[in-house]
Image 1 (cartoon, helix red, strand yellow):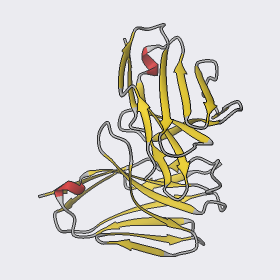
Image 2: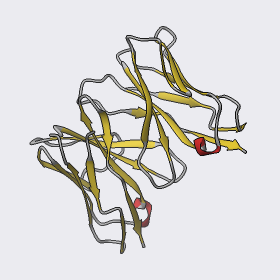
Image 3: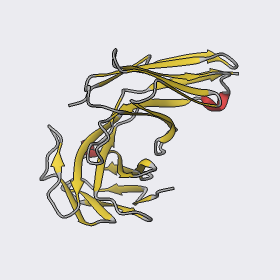
Length: 113
Length: 114
């Protein structure tokens, strides 16, 4: 099955700086790579996703890059704000409709004002 | 967008009792429902995949007799934690795949076994 590794486990940045979180996956059949933000006791919230037919996707301050050859993908947050502080999870799946997401171990991002 | 309603949001039960958690897809048909468990400060770990009208598929190490999953209709899947013990205390969350919205999550259930 799929195995997703995520680094770093914690990340502290100053407000306004950029943050980068990296993930690698093992299953070459995976073709859907979402990123989630989770606040304590809440459901994961999708912040951005990418499919294997593109290498990069951007939505305002958030971007995701994908390198299928190397089997890794990254989340980039620019101009970080205190409200970006949360736990972020990457995930991967061969999106057949019947395969679950496999999650990374999570990154606790703290943005210092 | 797609909505999955999960109930209850919090439950406290006595050791040895059973607890049922429901997930309903409100505006789409969820052929497949995924059940995850999340321990504090940990990631979401897949417990089982339930398919409407057939037996659930459990991940390695998950006791199927302890975590009973029923997916009797295209809009309802239930997880019953039988003979709950304190080590079953966790955050349980369901998820369904709904094109084109992607994977939709329930709001989660915080189970505390005392």
